[in-house]
Amino acid sequence: MARLDSIQSLQNKGSLAEWRLDLFSRIDIAWMQTLLQDSSGPVLLTVRKSSQGGKFQGTERQRKGLIRRLLALEPPFFDLECDTSPRFIREMMREHPKTQFILSYHDFSKNPIDLERIYFSMQKYPAFSYKIAKTVNSTNEALALLLFAKEHPKASVICMGKRGEFARVLGPVVGNLIGYASADSKRPTAPGQLNAATLNTIYRYPALNQQTAIYGLIGDPIEKSRGHLYHNRAFQTLGLNAVYIKMKVKPKELPQFIQQAVAIGIQGLSVTIPLKEEILPFLDEIEPKAQQIGAVNTLLFKEGKIRGTNTDGLGALDAIEKRALVKGKKIVLLGAGGAARAIAFEAKTRGADVLILNRTVERAKRLAADLGCQGGRLDEVPDDYDILINASPCSMPIDPKKIRPFTLAMDVVYSPRETDFLKQAAFTQCQLIYGEEMFLNQAARQTAFWLKQ
Ligand code: NAP
Image 1 (cartoon, helix red, strand yellow):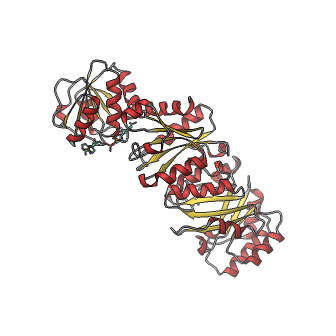
Image 2: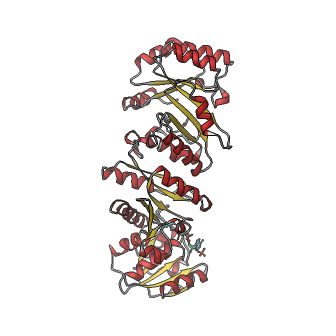
């Protein structure tokens, strides 16, 4: 159980503390009374039965008896499950007008539910909020629940499970009257629940409201991305009422995702693998450079249109040109995927001589042909280059002996920071550029694209 002082400190900041009494081995009503009286902020009491995901051990009759005794203490908030007997719910609500009731519905299954029907059946009781907690299996499912909350002011939706994490952040943005976080960082009380420290420090949860602009990352995988750390910090520094969340989206989910992203009012997105090309058919406008590259990593939703741009190449070249201009320099690029493509185009635009080497040689040759340069195999690293860039996720894609001493060596991978490639380059006394620097540069350019349009 989280320490009392950490709960009190959260309450002092305006949070509601939920006491999940079904998790207690013994409940002393006199102690509960003292706790309610001494509480530094509002309290919500819950005694959840097992069919609703709770751990209450006794019979339903014993549970109702306990609820009666607890409600006699007049707690500010009380959670009652909507499948408790209707007579009991009505009686409790009638007899305890000073308590605000959260009427709750939980579904831990992976099956779809009829939200309208559930919400309609809950509304026969005069509750403060109607809470629908559902396990979600995809970003699209979570967005559908969030849209429901946006359209129904007294509904609070809780998206349980890993895929629902981002939706827990967006609760206040869609008008949820209640949201949940664990006070203890190591022990969530429901699947996918974030802890209060993460919500407050990274996402600035207490400051979020229905005017907050939503930005985020889409792609798969997204776990390693640090975009949420960078962009939320940037919004805070700029004094913007905006939040950035990470959403796992697969190519086949894009049509529904885009429709729901527009409906919920998303204003901008970062796009990562494998969606940088897959997203193109959904865009109304593509910046000329991104059009040339054939991939985007940034979207702006504005005035009913979706515009795309690509900041990857700019991010990488800005980092390199902080050390040395690339005009007239020979760059060897390892990889021919999305990142390599964006870097190669930008390097060519800035006047570099680019050689593309890739595991799949045909892909290197195709990209080289698009750019009007040379392509080849990974074992064809020449001796006379100025800059070597690893644009593949492989930690060491070439023979380490091929790294030329005293040149500039860059890796696009930023997690881990020290790749084998950079370790070897450091050993041969190259000047190093970490993937992190490219990441920060391209992210800053994304912020600018979102805000300066
Ligand atoms: P991608 O489109 O999937 O391309 C991957 C490239 O790496 C391909 O050329 C692939 O060769 C090559 N490759 C993959 N595994 C390899 C291996 N084991 N040995 C040798 N070559 C290998 O991916 P991407 O979008 O270009 O991203 C590449 C990396 O850059 C990712 O790790 C990504 O996270 C990172 N990135 C970083 C930033 C940043 O801001 N720092 C921005 C964008 C991307 P084949 O063609 O033979 O498959």
